[in-house]
Length: 326
Length: 109
Image (cartoon, rainbow over all chains, first blue to last red):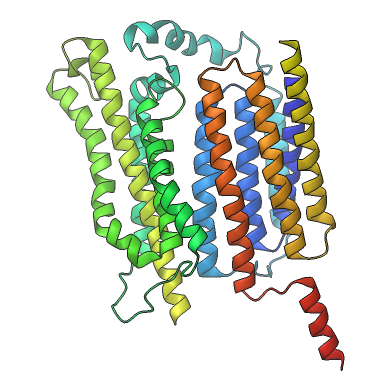
């Protein structure tokens, strides 16, 4: 039964991908991107990788769709006709694809217990992490503690994305005489529902943030969900009112605070006599120290992701609003 | 529980039927508003039926509560989304089918 579901989902994935290549309407392509991410999330769930599925659903299907729609609002929704001949790219793609397929022949059989990946580090994590870290959700232990340095790198990448977007676009504060309200002005239903739901979404984000030690979730997902709440607010009530709630300058400070919080945990554990990001030294009991470390760095990740996603949306939104006015 | 299983399967199958008919309507109906009508109305009833069917499959613990929360969430968001979509389309100048027909007739005269 699981195989059947996998096959159907993979077939739908392939159809979606092919459709994306042939469509010229970029708006539809963005929607298909969202569907694609959601289908891969379903495949991850079928593989019992709930954390990855959660990330894929919230980041891939949720926030990146919104951000790509924001980009479309700036650039226009039709694909330009390419004037180059397509023979050379086709050749390159075919050769690369053939090489990749040739490469898969050497891959170990899918899901076989003797595969290298099941013999090297995975058994150690599974056997030792309850003793060393003691969290029910092993994914969080691996992500935040064993591979804490990788996760720091990922957080810095997210931060760097913000710097790139701000360097290219920048958030424009509106002048007083601009058209004051965009958004859905007279949309009472949306106003009421949004007012009711935004606190609940933020509450759910906090739950995901702090429940990440025990179940699926963690900083990345929580940050994205919290950002989604504020994006909803911006869409419904307009950019100027959202700037009054969380200003862009404050968000930029928040984004760097998250990264700094993460890195300072690493330096603090060095100060305590351990290695960089060695949480065992944070408290007298190493397991308690691990718990402190994981909660704090997850908080750092969550703050950075939230601030970066919302800042990027602000950057797109303020540019789009400006071009609408002109 | 045998009876609960039967009720739950009936609910699930009914939900799938409504979801499928909604998808069919989305392709078959003539214009934007009728298509959206098909999708949104069947979407609500399919959600209710499928989630109720799933609730009967749980052993009435925390998962039941979570499914109920999802149900309440979808019951509010999905009609709101349809409403916002229809209103935006209307606001953007999209006409219903009779109105377009009237306009076309005016143009031919």
